[in-house]
Length: 207
Image 1 (tube, rainbow, N blue to C red):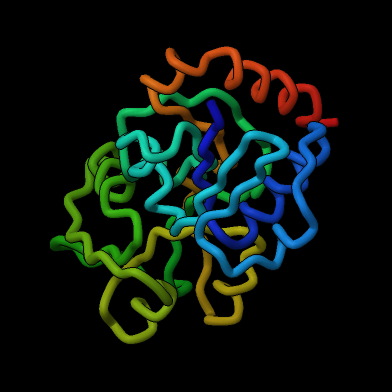
Image 2 (cartoon, rainbow, N blue to C red):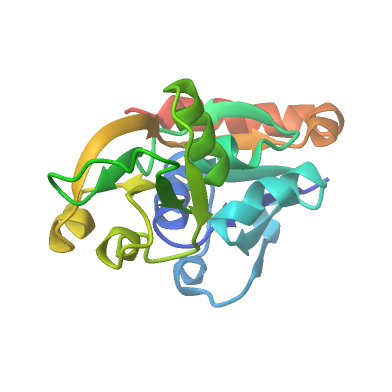
């Protein structure tokens, strides 16, 4: 029984592939440049599905992938029925509240623009603030600049994008790393294979 792993494209994919190679998995060189959405690695009994980051937990929850690699931000936002097995400690970043410097939030229902409506509304509710959430899918930094929102909630890695757009951070919400997640049924049916993968990855994490 082979294992199917859903992975997001981009930075997490590159760092995860490096981690798997260090754990002794023989992934072919063309793996890195592939335009394919499904990559078979018969020698390792593995199959990879390349997906949008937000879709990875969905694929795992529905069982079309046994395992997935997803950022903690996606896990918090999506709240899918999957188990989190391992903090892979890759793709470090954090979720933060940002906006234009020296600006106060509106007194009445301040507007917050974000790709993470669930995380953002939970955070402001915990602060005792009633806010209006505006969901955007990209270029979140634009929202305060064009008067669409008082604040944004977004992922910050280096902080360069915020600086280049004249924005500042106000609060950090949560630190983010990528996690290995599993479908609960797969975990029962393919436990030996999955435990082997977890053991091998555990040994190389943080080396």
